[in-house]
Image (cartoon, rainbow, N blue to C red; front, top):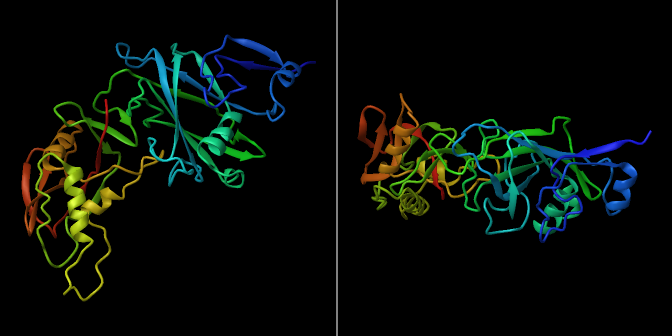
Length: 343
């Protein structure tokens, strides 16, 4: 009996990476013999395909098409740690993003052949064939626009983390469950997962993503002396964070003992990294940014450091229901990092 392979809205299995052939195909049934004649020799008929299906969630804002797809490669099995590859200037970094124009239909499947992922990692991201054997997962992000915000939901994440095994020119699933449900919307809203965190503020110059988790009991400053950092902005946490980092990295000549471990608020955000390759661009929010995050996400019960300095010994904090307060820099409060995004 002749076995058959079924493909629904498949993305061009003989994919050429420069154009990526990202178009939906008609539903077809092909026999193994037909596949072996149509595909190049490197394509194994045993390769598995990644299947996605969109469910209806935000009826008025559901996307009607995918405009770009981003791939990030990891040595971990859960898309944590540093993304692999040498490509710079992409988002996140490193990753490979391709433009697309894929029409979406609710509850209609489409698949991505895994041979393509080897080519993307090896050719587009510069991961050597030897290093490709160490790849254990990829993060796949769909976007309804070519801007940075995916507005998707894979069980609370903005990307699907796919466990894979790569060898001899192809990458295959390491799990039998290859169906990933997602929701792609055309507009962002507070509370949606996006780019390694949660959309916390939109509009009024505060398009912010807050980190999904937070750090408790963190000091604003970690030296025994207290210089002024000039981190005085009420609205620009990224600039404040950079200024704090610069001053903390340059202790005065009279500092005799080694500096303490750098677990202070600005450092935590500057070095923060979330799964899916979103390991850059995070900062300690300024007081106006922090208040928007705390209020919009209803972060009750804790007091959070802002990056806005009050004077050489104190800085501003925020607590839901209490508003802004001044604390000495050596007090231990909570930290919630943030990054900006393009809605």
